[in-house]
Structure formats: C-alpha cells, structure tokens
Length: 245
Image (tube, rainbow, N blue to C red; front, top):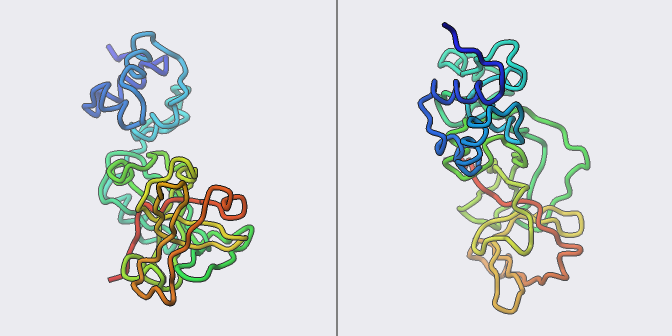
C-alpha cells in the first residue's frame, strides 16, 4: 500500500529516508538543530519556518513540499547540467548534485581594489550563476542562497589575492561591525564608493583596512573606528573568488 503523504512532516520524512539522511544530517543541511526535524516528524507537523530550506536541501519542488500537489522531483541530472551549461547566461558551479541548484544573481557591480568605484543604484543583471547545495555547504554559506551576490573586483590593491577582473561571491549577511572576523576580506561603502579591503580588529576598537598589495606607498593601511562607519559601512564579506589563471 502506497504511503499517504498528506502532511508536510510525512513528505519531509519520506524524502529524507529516500535520500538516506538522518534527522541530524538534514538539520545540519538547513542550519537548524536536529530537534527541529525530530519535532516536525514526531508531531506530524503541517507547517514549518524551515520549509523553503527543507525544499532546497531535499531537492524537491517547494510547492509540492508545502501542499503535496504537483511534481515533487527536481533533482538535477547530468543531462540537465549539460543543457543548462550551454546557456550563455547560465553557469553551474559545484559539479554533479542530488539537490536543487541555487541560483545567485550576477549583476553589473564592482568593488574597487584601489580608490573606490561608484555603482549604479539599480545595476543590470548580467546573468545567473547556479551553485550546488554541496558547494555552498562546504563553504559555510546559506544553502538557500539568500544574501549571496556576485560582483567583480577592479584595480590591483589586493595584489595576487584578488587580481583585477576577479569574480567574487560575497555574503551580504556578514556586514555587522560588531561581528566581523579579523583578517578576512570585506566589501565596504565609503561615501557611496565601493572598495574591497582586508580588515583587522585592533585592541582599542579601531579597524585597520589593509591592501594585500605590498606597495604601501600606493596603498597605505587605513584606520577607521565605529563612528566612522556612519559614512563608511560594511556591505558584505568576500567568501569565494574565481581567480583567473
């Protein structure tokens, strides 16, 4: 007798078992405590605040997971990848996957590795780059793609770390002054101009912005404090670069 999948909990459990995932593994995929999955399934829940993330992690159609109607299967086959990769505005990063692809907008945005660059208020979308859930998870990024953005670096102040023209994957969720990580690279907005620098926290509460280029006559270190961030804000953390070889 075919199992009735008349609740969200049953559909989640069915797909979880089909993919051979434990409750703990699925919880990790969606960035939640394992008890979230256990409670959902045990109580036969009909809704969850993690539904969208669950659909992504399980590789199923969101509308099917919510309602139980329509086609559940959205797995990406190797044939799908080859067809999609042939599109001029569609690139896939991360290889073969058993989950839904996560599309990240690729817009006409730049962050200057130099003196700063002014971007348009409404930049043109140049295309879409799709990432696998596995790639995002391995790089500790949100598997639903929320807050992620692709932009280019221009200039040479970041030396060999981020050469001119490098495509960067940035996370706009990591933009809080109090929580930024020392010795990581961030995109900042300085009086309307976008710049890319490595940031270091100092004991006195100030932050030193450093260019990886060794020529400090051209690219000297800059020190800012929390008050400076009224006009000098943190926009995103650079999480991955597609350096040209």
